[in-house]
Length: 532
Image 1 (tube, rainbow, N blue to C red):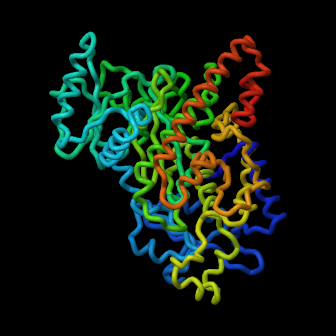
Image 2 (cartoon, helix red, strand yellow):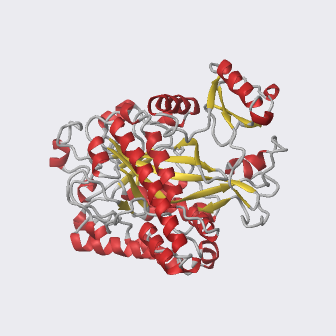
Image 3 (cartoon, rainbow, N blue to C red):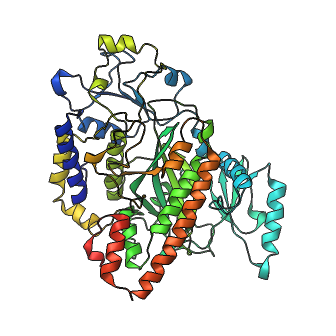
């Protein structure tokens, strides 16, 4: 299956190639420069096929236990967590796709407990982005009190609740109810207030899958992918039919079996997914300035990860890809629904192909492979690194400017695919997510040379934390959560003030198109001109 990309992405690939050739950095192709060996990947049996496909396209070789030593590899990818010994024995040229002790954030009851603890410590104003939730059976009495309050509220308004098994995924076991007599369960569940006023497009409910990469927990370094997926229910939203999962749930694993999945639905189209770029184009078509919305989502990501960051052991050469599921309500408030560990990377539709293949490519780029990583059996290097936790050990944080490459074989194929009619029909008129930082984002030729300062952008991954010098210093050594939370509060206040000023200026200009376009360019980078 081919990789489909837009013109800006092709230009970025050329920039990577040019910068690499200028500075002599390593492009991990099969032949290898100066006789270096090929980079080798090792996959667990349940690894999504797209990971193998991307790595082979980049010129890697798959680990063969009959031909190579057990530890003769550069990347080990699993959908489940690694053993403690895997982290203890990892060598400088090796990477793991999980940090230790991060799986708990994806278990619904653990997430509820952690967010509840942070809400009690730092207040509901800051941590009010998750619906009120109870863990049953332990919180059953507290749930009854809240349920009674909602029934006796102003006007006796009916409240809606959603029940989810704590340890299941893909929408399994979920149901919605408005009367407690319908609440039944035979295993631990969480019961949350159901957001009954979701944002709808032509009557269809949707949520956002935001891809987040934590490159390091010490220092805390978070990248958010500027593309992503928008997932739709396949039947129109209707509170009168709470038992219709095709109307209320957006999980692809459920909706692909719905009777209207292949139907060309009004504005949504066939299937149940958009790319984030297409969603952003929709927001612009409605006259919505989404900068504040995206920054709210970034804050949700940071504040959620702060719930586990202090307890994650400091381990080099690991990174973690999370999938944050965000619901936007009719007031454009984003709500955190859940966090996914090893988010699904299956390719089931054109939107999946566009987003996930590039996502895996850029994730590999974030791993900072260089020429020396291919010398797995080099005598001096091997002897020097027998003790992997020595102080001289190189981590994923760049100490010299690194260029993140996609090999020639891949970017040439991307250019060939640009002319694909399928792509033009699907991806035309789409926009990118805004650059997270309002200050200038450096190009690949301007990467910082200061040690332990991460690049602001790697491919389509945008650095969202740290977002200033104070948060960078607070994430060094022992994580200073209080200082980080204080800076997030300041950022929220500044964004609100900035947004109010922009709205006032916009009114004064009477909607001057040229000025609006200039402001959006400063915030988001180049936009598709058709919007204006």
